Amino acid sequence: MPRSQIKLVAAISALVVAVVVGFAGVTERDLAERAETRARADLEARVTGARDLLGPLPLSATPPETLAQRARTLSEAFGARVTLIRSDGVVVADSALPPARVLEMENHATRPEIARAARGERGHSVRTSASVGRPLRYVALTVEAGDGTVRLAEPVKEAPELAALRARAAWALFLGLIGAALVAAGITRLYARSIERMRRVASSVAHGDLTARVRRHMGDEFDPIAGAIDQMAEQLRLRLDEATHEKERLRAVLNGMVEGVLVVDTGGKIVLLNQRAREFFGIRGPVESRSLLEAMRHAELDALLSRAAETDEAVSGEIRLGGGGERVLRVQAVRFPAGPGARMGTVAVFHDVTELERLEQVRRDFVANASHELRTPLTAISGFTETLLSSESLGPADRRSYLEVIDRHAQRLTHLVSDLLELSKIESRKVTLKLDAIDVVAIAERLLQDYHERFQEKDLMASVAHPGSAFVRADPRALEQILVNLVDNAIKYTEPGGTIAIRVEAEGHQVAIHVEDTGIGIPAQDRERIFERFYRVDKARSRELGGTGLGLAIVKHLVQGQGGEVALVESRLGEGSVFRFTLPRAEREAG
Image (cartoon, rainbow, N blue to C red; front, side, top):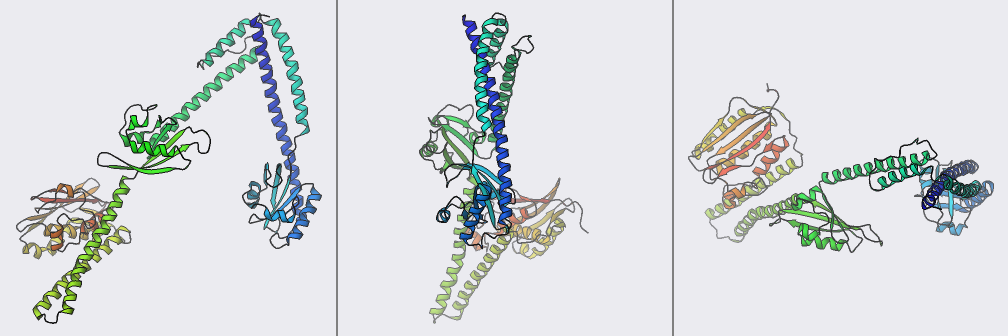
């Protein structure tokens, strides 16, 4: 027999096998499903009868012996294993086990059929029983008393028609192979052209050309095969398109994540690095298939991933990027897949905790500064009080001097505690801000009038520059407190003969308020931190002038609480400073 005939016989035989086996498999599955449906329906009918016979018997209040006897009676009546379970999942009776074994049974609250029955549904499942060690079919219903569940179980048996189907399928396969061999041997030459066409298409599909088609209706008996090949090529094309789209979606999700993601294989080669991780490490260009140290040059990260590769537990740590540790990343790394099987690689997720680290440092600084600010006046008060109590030879002048020192530090403590309480209320949003249309120019002019005597004492010139009335959406008391703190700072740090100006400008939907002075100025390195609590540029001078170090922090939180923003301070040493903040512009004017 020529080789072409042998190949054709083999091909047709293979097709016959595929068709028969496929048809038999589908039919067998259909028969199995029908048999399972019948068996389940029968068991459901029996469990309904069992529940009806059980009646309103409460499972929680009935003695175990009575429940065990009732379970055995129901089992004999309905030909199935009967189990009674309380609503808390405890098994109280089982027809297949003696009462002593029932007490050892696990809690059944998490069993699928019990969980569904507890929700008022008809629960059913098929699985291997832990108590009898063989596959069982379960159906469960809530008892009439409502305090538990009755469950029936029976062994899973194969339907008799399945064995007959397999026998018929074997005969069909045998006869089909013989017929295919006989037919193929006689018509090899007649259908050589069709076979060659299908061979070429199959070869094209195998080499990745999923657009190739045999084209059906060739006018011979190979139409079904040609259709199967075309259908296979189309399915492969659809699956490939789906896989490509899924890959693109996954890439989009990974690149859209706030967290960085890194995946390496067992050899430490990079498999995947999302966009966020590239930004963290400043990586440009492809890095796949390169080693971690070669592409990212970070020994701590390499060591962390090595530790993660040796354990099933997640390994976490922190790494710092940049020469001065400008960015702090928390890394969570774990090998995959977990378990004793062969490892495919390690995945690491990077969380940027730079801001959290900064806030933690601010918190530590606040605690330290608050302790220092409180300790200084308390120490002075304690020292002078001890002197007054222990020295009886002090004259009236000395005593008055000491008491004045104590009073001054007590007032400083009072101001400090008051500012702390005020700042705490603002930060916790316990201060209710009643926003209304407020003329900021009128408030600024009234404030300068109130400070007229202080301006005269320091020989300062003060003014309000504005194009007219400017209304903002703000709380009057909060706005006044903001301006009071800023103007008070300007007075403290402006030398005699200087000027202080409040400038108001409308900027679109915002109104910008500037408080300018010709004071001593603020160093560049301190401008970003002056709104922090207790932060002082000149600590000695600030305390001498009576400042608590909380005024600008209160300003910042009040502005933000009214929907505004505080800008970075503009300042030059020896020339003065400009504090600028914005508030939402009012849509209508008051009054």
